[in-house]
Amino acid sequence: MVVRPEAVPPSDVVLAHLKGKRTDVKGLLFQTALLLSLLLSLLFLVVLLVDIFLDAMAVFETRSLASFLEGSLSGFPDRAGVSQALYGSAMLMLFVVFVSFPLGVAAAVYLEEYASDTRFNRFITVNIRNLAGVPSIVYGLLGLSLFVGTLSAITGGPSLLAGGMTLAVLVLPIVIITASEALRAVPLSIREAGYGVGATKWEVIRSHVLPSAAPGILTGTILAISRAIGEAAPLLLVGAVGGLLGQAQGGFFSQLQDRFTALPIVIFEWTKEANSEFKALASAGIVVLMVIILISNAAAIILRNRYERKW
Amino acid sequence: MGAAVLSIIISALIVLSLVSEAFSFLTAIELSSLWSGLWSPRSGQFDLRVILSGTLLISLIAMLVAAPLGIGAAMYLSEYARPRVRRILKPIVEILAGIPSVVLGYFALLWISPELVQRLNPSAGIFNMLAAGIAVGVLVMPLVASVAEDALKSVPMALREASYGLGARKMSTTLRVVTPAAVSGIMAALILGLSRAIGETMVVAIAAGNSPLFSLNPFQGGQTMTGAMAQLAIGGDQVKGDVAAVQSLYFVGLLLFLMTLVLNVTSERFVRRVRQRY
Image (cartoon, rainbow over all chains, first blue to last red; front, top):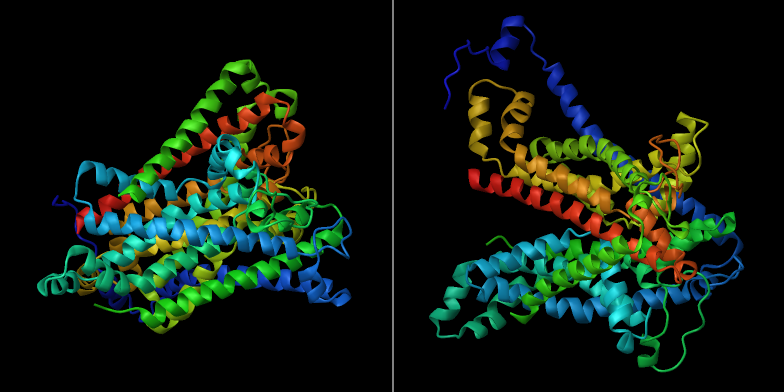
């Protein structure tokens, strides 16, 4: 510690008494300023929600919600709807659930439970953190060159399969990181108790560690899904359709190789239209998207609050 | 094990696909077109100054919004808010973090631009970089707030108590004891925010306009790296025949990837310094 030669100034409380001031005006102003920065964000959120909601209400004055939800993409704003976009987004989420979730949890279990602290494993961890920070549009480039280009024989070019795999790769690092954190929060004593009664490593993980970490892992996955459902940039690059799209035909597997669209893509296209009726439709689409996202986020928060345990 | 190695394969594939296409882009075009004063891939003009300046200007505006709001919110949540207040205020930040960027793009174009920017300067275009920057700032603010809050909260209670014991008030304690102790975490939050702002695509693609010209006027439209990439992707069908334009996508992507990678690694460094101290 460096010893400072100059005299130590009197502290706040001493100074205040010397000057005979009891109320801490500066401190109160500072606190208010801090609170204001939070309230400004809240204000912004409220204005955003109200503005978009009002725009959307104007649409539903002339047509029913059902016709908007059931309609397909169209050049006529009074007939256009989001059914294909909802279907596309739902299908894309299936990829996130069935590809990212198992792979992500497996990777997290390996990193937290099995991996020894070698240079290689540390490199993997750092690498995953960096992958989580890569801009989503760069994942779109990966999808474009890998899933649309190299693997086009399997994916059929700019298809649902290519888009779904791109999103799955995009959220994989997020799933791994949140699952790792959930696993790390399980105390060592739980594991040791398992070993103490003679369980093997895998038995301990399967019957004790994973169930204890399940709420955390699920919360992380839900948040990853709600991130993926609002993601548009990588889908643009992989070739999601924003204009007209034929009705889905054929069986499940041939649909996977068809071109696709998604809710955020449709919102983007409608926002860019010069026609103000389409802009209004975009706000209606946003309301649908926000309802989905808010429901899933609320589910995640409730899940976290209900099962959060202090060890 | 296999699943973890997959992450390395993914990063390798990203780097590989970016580098190979970017390299063939650089060999295919005349290098002088990277400095021609115009970003117009369709006519073979790839001036990097146009998109770099747009990206930097919008990120700067975004950080001017996100840094004070984010750090202020973090200080309030970590130092001032009582647990009950915190339980109400914290989810607000989390909801803000969950808003998709397309939604903020719509809001930037149809509310921030006409209601805020054009009131401020009536001659501003409807597509302008200021509106886009503000919206990106709002998008980045929750990230800055949550990382900075983690940093402030990891400062040991003993430091605060020692400060109170010396007769300091809450404000001096927050500003002169807690903040300096958490400064590397706060820096990490800002750098991470900047990296997110640089990589943000949909807001700028919707609200910043697609001017091919060099401009540092925030009231005008501009072009950013991500915006240019989105534009190339949408116009995909017309550009398809033009190999250089498609490859320029990968070149810009590589630049973007490197910029964010450097920022993320730097921020990781800063975070690690916080952890070592206590």
